[in-house]
Amino acid sequence: MSAGTRRFSTVSNWMIAVAITVGMGSVATAQDDPHGLAKIVGIKGGECRKCHPSEVSAWEKSTHALSAARLVYQGNSKKYADALGISSASLATDSTCANCHSTQQSVAGKVQLGGVSCEKCHGGAKDWVQSHGTYFDGMKFSDLRQLRSDRQQETLEHKQTRIAATSAAGMIRAADLGKLAKNCLDCHMIGDEKLIAAGHKAASSFELVSWSGGEVRHNFFMDQTKNSAAPTAWAADTKLTAADRSRLKFVVGTLAQAEAALRKRAAAKNPAVIPQFGGLAAAANGKLAQITGAAPTAGTGAAVGVLASKLGVLFVLQPTDGKVYNATADQIAEQIKVFVKGHDGSKLGGLDSLIKLTPPHYSQQYKQKYGVK
Ligand code: HEC
Ligand code: HEC
Ligand code: HEC
Ligand code: HEC
Image (cartoon, rainbow, N blue to C red):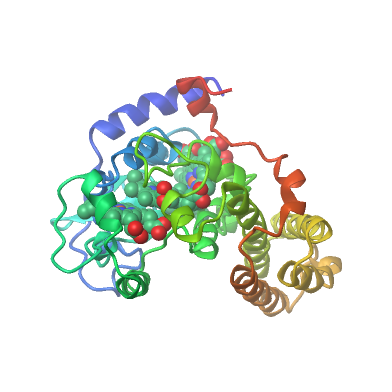
């Protein structure tokens, strides 16, 4: 990680100082806005900082905040861009790379880029930023202490209406584990075969408990001085513990990985790429079998059953690939819903010895910069 890392940090410094501004015409309708630019409130967390200052500070230190630095035409980025026929000029606007390595925002008809920001994980906020933090009609924001106190004034009915409305408006909250995990994997498992053939990783060695528990963690809502092990608003509402949360994440993360690998496998045509996704699906199945052994549940048991019958053919190109694997992925998606509905983690203590093996994950650059071991 020597030369590459150095070049990366130099580039990222100026990138943060001046988010790239590139003309791309105006973004008007949903039709010419497949990446939801119109819903993005802010690429630098600025709109969120007023009420989430510690969450924003934690995020600013993360690799995600710096990730748009890869969208510069040099080194491996140049190699991958060349393989996909992406020009130097369009690298930082081309959605294939930019959609994973950045958040795009339309400002006065121009597209600006920032890191992988709040709204990439929690949903474009334009339609929910106002309502998600309003506990009663006429509530006015003054400071964070008042906000916490206003939280106690909300009626159950208002809360149910607020949560339903913000969800409908596209907000993804801590309780929406299936959606959160799927979002991570949309970026952390790569679908483009040309990109993989050019040398880009097919997938991160992703694991939801550890990868959300290190540099990504920002659970400050109820106490801005303390980064808690589990989301604090969620914990206050559910009365569940950090251990319960980790168990839920461990299972849902693995199911989501199985689903994502099957969908990529379904689309794979390149004989050099097929084994990579076959391998990821098989690995997820192995982990699900371990999970089911340690803490049997209907959802994971069913998922293992569904996957096991496909293991023999995962590695060989079949004429029916798309159909077979997408149908299997649909079944896993169904099991995620069954699992999330039926479990709160409190009875899955059998998983704790497996979870212990997944320590908080930090990137190399984060470790170097902030001295984390
Ligand atoms: C005016 C204050 C305010 C602003 C601005 C604000 N929030 Fe919030 N946010 C809140 C409050 C209050 C809560 C707690 C809601 C609750 O009690 O259910 C919250 C909770 C959240 C949660 C956690 C929800 C959960 O149930 O897990 C997320 C995620 C979130 N906000 C994201 C954002 C993002 C992203 C932005 C910027 C685009 C933003 N917020 C801007 C007040 C605000
Ligand atoms: C990489 C994806 C990702 C990004 C980027 C991200 N979040 Fe989150 N956020 C999550 C996940 C996952 C959780 C649940 C954490 C857990 O399970 O420990 C969460 C939880 C939260 C919570 C609940 C905290 C609590 O104590 O209840 C808030 C508030 C929040 N995020 C706001 C933000 C804001 C504001 C930003 C941008 C500065 C942001 N998030 C960026 C994924 C993300
Ligand atoms: C919009 C795409 C996107 C989403 C969504 C996303 N990530 Fe990432 N993440 C990236 C990219 C791109 C990198 C690599 C950045 C780089 O190295 O320049 C990365 C890097 C990371 C890293 C640092 C890893 C390392 O060793 O360098 C962690 C940890 C991480 N992501 C966790 C998560 C988690 C957990 C979630 C979901 C809650 C998530 N990410 C969602 C795109 C995304
Ligand atoms: C589907 C999401 C996705 C797409 C599309 C994508 N990347 Fe990545 N990229 C990632 C993630 C995630 C990582 C971090 C992988 C890890 O180490 O876990 C990464 C890592 C990288 C790295 C650092 C590692 C290396 O291989 O040197 C570079 C450079 C890079 N991407 C450039 C690009 C370019 C250029 C494009 C477009 C031609 C692109 N990426 C498209 C998600 C994506």
